[in-house]
Length: 59
Image (tube, rainbow, N blue to C red; front, side, top):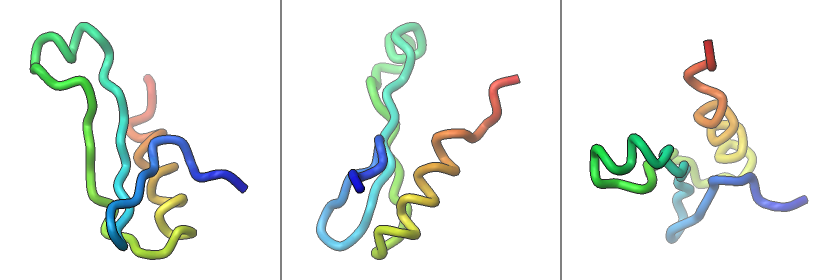
């Protein structure tokens, strides 16, 4: 099974990364948001990456 999209590992800790829409990226000067999941196990990191990918819900 492949690694979850947006999930990357640095050392022993997994991070979630998401590209920002062009309009927002231009306003704040960043192209991606990166956040430590504080998870060392791949199963937990995959779950947390999924949670962060679908949150907040698109209303």
